[in-house]
Length: 471
Image (cartoon, rainbow, N blue to C red):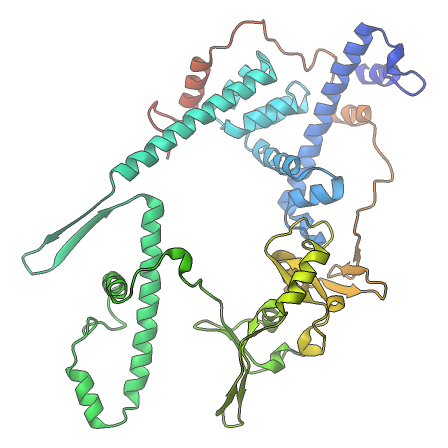
């Protein structure tokens, strides 16, 4: 009944808002606000289901938020917030129910979902019902501030307690004890893993050389030379190999002059691939990562679209005939012109303008030329979709790019608008919620908020012991 009254008395072109009395105007604003809240809850439930199904992937977009940005015209920041709130409501049924009834505004729900847990959601709802949206935001900001202070205190404590100690054992060995912050510790762990891998490759290479000795004298002289890894073998315990790796890191540092990290060469991915693999048929004997396993032919085609290339010519017996100079598959001048023209990824709906690759519409291994009309910029995600994801791309004679889904459907540059816009009152009526102008009204009595007590209560419900956040 209330919904029908709202629909009949709402301001329309025939009955503009200027003709409404002030009390009616206020009532219509609050009533419409509550109705929009109910519709927003329905929207969030639909977004959660779309995200759960990953249905946005069929359009090639990067995430559900990107789909909302492209299909619904929602700003990326607001789209990410809607997806975040939609996911959070699944574990906060009381908050979801209050939003569904229009009693809790989206602004309040959005703030609550940043800090609420299943244990503290009832407490946060009480704050929201007896306070304004500003009160809820103030509580959330204060809680997050205390949380950051606690985390900073823990970080400072970990940094202050960093230490390295060693001692000598009776058997002549040394014991090291190290305590560092986690992020520094992981840096050491990664270095040890890299050193273990390097030693394994070095050992494997030495084993292959020993299988085919050139003469007995060389073999005897090698055996007389002591090594730091004299007792190391493939059956050594993992902990022992890590200890060897740590010593190897120290040896390497002492053997080379230390250089700033910004001058160190970055890791590169090296791929060995036959030219025949890069052709349209994609067949060949060689297509693998250096020091790694085999990769798909289409993956290799994607990687060499915009990469440094070194050509090696071999004879029929595998003899190396010639090694060419390293060159870019796309010259720097063309790359700069391409960046100026495309201004980022050209895939429909994509806003990425960083970390983009130059893609050959017709691959250069199939005879495609490295020219502007055969090149397009794509982000890493969409570049992968065109090679390994089944999506295709064509360029018309007029230069327009056409992207197609794996099922052959054309991806529109701009999605078509909906043919019919549903009335808010109809959505509220379908939900079965009785919405009135009183529904969204706060129960705040005008008293000042005791922020210290509110934050303390929330900390207790969220599992804090008063000194540090839960692990």
